[in-house]
Length: 166
Image 1 (cartoon, rainbow, N blue to C red):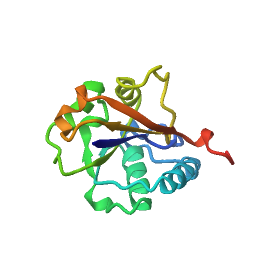
Image 2: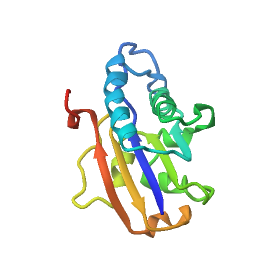
Image 3: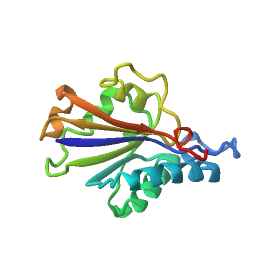
Image 4: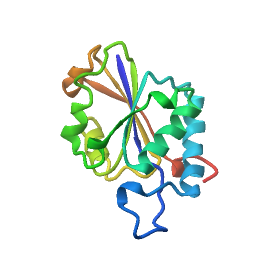
């Protein structure tokens, strides 16, 4: 079995219009909302074997924030620039060379690619993955490169507005 936690980056700042999109940081509000998701993940006893993130600042900050909270060494996160403008097909390429010893993976990136990616298995599909959302999919395979055709089970979808206290 392989488990993927697909994470859309937290809410980012538009306070600096001259800043390139790739370099936009997280808002404090985004961090607070992500903390609610982290608390949910901690209650689920999530264990991460590997983390891959877009190199965009808002995605890398989200990956670092969640990974550290879950006890993953944030220095081991793989930052991949191709995920910044990825499509669903490019996301599949992330799994081709993964070590099969990894049982779980967190992938942090952007819409619309992440929504399109998870919709390969969601019935009915979702319209849009909100910021700080996590989709947990479990695949019936022992090999990452077989993910595309492996049967999958949705374990959960969580985002801040679904969590009480929002």
